[in-house]
Image (tube, rainbow, N blue to C red; front, side):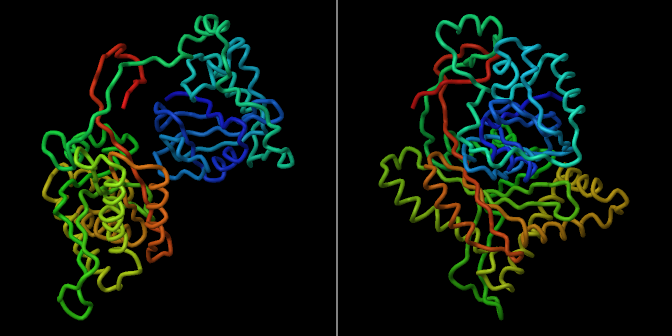
Length: 417
């Protein structure tokens, strides 16, 4: 467990959204579930803290306007509040450059005395409810973000002497190269991502999810409600399916439909990529969403859900490790649940997830923010039975070839494209 200060800069709006939605967003990797964070923001030229919490499980919820900045987001648990108090007393422990030592990139605080002082100050200002800042204060008057102050050339050496980890250290240099295509056994995007899924996406935990990479296992097909005659329209095969366990009895699972796409070596021109995106990728993702949306006849939806649930259960019960994993989830939710009823609970939870908690994930080698926003708007227009939108997430994965390794202990890398 590490202690960190999550600094919202001068954005009171972002601070309030963290408090309101009980989430924390980080611009770099490093924080982990169980870490304790102090939430801070600049106000009236002070660095004020008003919340302390532990990081819970990773989440895809990003309520901030600048959500693209955040590479990792976590639920906040065991939340406590305080009357906003100034953090500048940390200069007693970090010296002149205390913001670089304690605020920069929400790094783990190594100074035990500083941690103790933080906790004591928070407890002294403890409040039952969150206390908001003065809303009449215009945001542009809030001062600058002191979590990463500008350093002059003259100060650099002194800064590095006092805060050696202030400067980014580079583990190596890399060249961006192309995947061959989506499915190539040696250099295909889908193959490489599937083999390294949990290492590439640490927000999904192998203890709290089940990845089913069998891309022909599932088939959503429209059938006439009064018979078995296939009809044109809704027919999709996702490349993979991910079942995410929430730990909550009211909604144990989220279903993630995964689509791998790759422009690779064959589609390098912007026009080719655009044509493929609009003519192939977006329609495919729309079929995913439509299969479980209210735009599809309910009898067809129910039949599709029943078929998929049966195949998932069959997949689980074909592997003892999967049985142990999924059964353990329900034993955690219902400690007194008899073994013979676990299968029924799995069926119920999966059916509920297909009705209420679906997200579509696109894993691709190139996508602009504008294209991502367009696809997100399209997918979110499909509604579930609850009235909630189907969610969309896009991950851009690139293949990097090593040029030179410099420092195995460093956290950052430089790549050239």
